[in-house]
Image (cartoon, rainbow, N blue to C red; front, side):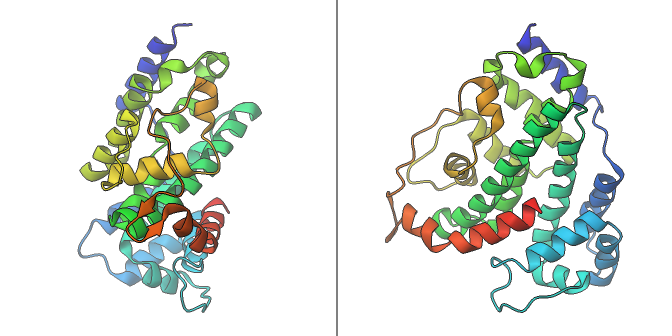
Length: 278
């Protein structure tokens, strides 16, 4: 099998409108579109979210996580959860529903297992990116959260298309990192309509070169990817990881070490990661 040709075919398929979304994802996309409407009110948005059970459960769960619930006061209704999170974080969660629906699309159990592992990795990277943006690179935390959610969409789409190319996930996927991941990723991200700043961050991720000290949104994403305790299964399939500067966990960031920042925020990271994976 010519893996490079298959990867190009998969990218062309996504770019040509081959992506099919479930009902849950379609409703989540409606929420995303509503968020872009300046006339959309909190009440209208809350009703849209409440109509999609997966998204509404995710919204309430994340709103009650340590990261967003500093007061410790739990809430149980969608409107209060939307109000607490804000529209920017809600856009992230709506996108998370769209991405995660790809996890259940493969027909073969072994392919679904790879996709489930990829979502676990994605959740960790998204939460770490949000934390690193807050504490290290001083980027917009919700923008970093969003970038983390979509950073493996190319991998998800490749897995969903594996049934059409028997043996693909058993082949040597070394061409994935570099041209393959970027080709498929760009096509899927265009369908999802991600902002230009996210696309730029993804290009940094695909290039794999981490600046030290990290400063940009791309650096934020790449650092989170390297620090994730759950490795992407795409790295195992490719027989290699993204190239990049090895991260020194005790490197000084302003007046703190990276390891200290991660230790101090461990509860926040665990709470938000669990809310995403639920």
